Image 1 (tube, rainbow, N blue to C red):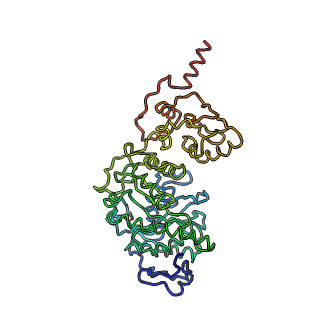
Image 2: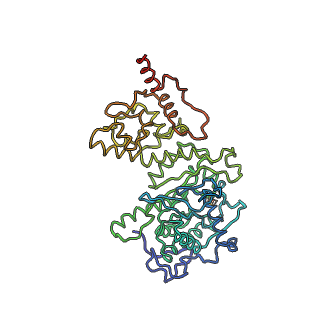
Image 3: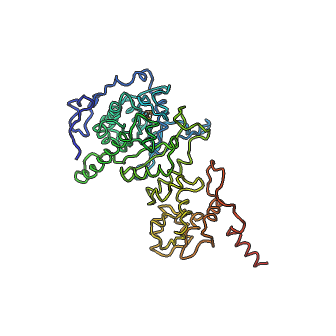
Length: 483
Ligand code: SF4
């Protein structure tokens, strides 16, 4: 059971009349829970108008990918509608699968820390700005009323100290929920090092919380973000996990109990700034899913925004987007396809294949498990077949109760046959006579229009010979017979 007692925030207790019904409480007029006072927010931002702040703080938020879309650079040519260049609105998916637009902003881009990879670090000479809680509330409400957004994604640099920043975030959410009665989606960052009480209180107002892991290992964190420690990051993550568990039990007993972080927690790792392999990154992600019950791990390809000897040298190749993409594919396999990190990569082969997605690559390395008979294979094995997604696997299991499936049925179900045909049989027969051999299947998959990323310059698989091509062989025999 979570304590319903008011807590002491940064030395100042809540005003008497805001204590009732804590947690959650009622916000009266302009009173502010805790010690934060409006005129204390950063001096540098006071002269800027709201529009300027919005420009600065949406732009500063674009490097945070712990939502679903971020960072594309395609500009509008001015003749059509929309532009991908403007930051500010990102998308997320709610538990029922709806795509929702979020106002994505930093509360402040001022920061006392000096993380080497971050554009907002203390030592960078960038224009600084900070919102006030009321400004964030009115922006959210105005955008919501105009139907631009359905929720808020609020992150922040660290102003003064973690507690001070967390309290500002808490105050913002408190006002938004209690004063403005905003009931839309809110994703908020928990600031590492902030007090447990503040994180707890904020969690009762937010839908999702995230604490950024930043870098995969403690050594990398030490090298690039010396002000942060693994302990400071994992402690709030554990706290959120424990309170979520307690809250689930509490809700079973008291159905009207306030919900704590109902959409779960997530985190983000920067990829490519430090030398960890994909194998190490997947191990970390898997352990976060298992030990902290995270909803999502986001991978953010390292973007070179600072010159620093501790960062990898600039190569002109841009951020490692293909690597980020492969990690997301593998992450999907961990969460929905019952794979383990150990199966996808090994210490001897620690990075993903650039030619094939991780599932296809796994199948090519485990041809002894194929072909799979779709009319009999269990659900988990169907999930491992390239070309069969988790929705198709469910449909196959349901449909085969009604009769024996053939390739035409699989096509209707949504199986991508040009990929799956090398790995399945239907009623004991393959779609075409084909060899179960790694090089052969790999070449055929590539020649059958497997989308190659632009970065791929060389092919690892053996050159295709005319006699390797099934269709060539069939045509050849047909023609021979005719002759
Ligand atoms: S804490 Fe580090 S990553 Fe976060 S805003 Fe400050 S400098 Fe950037």
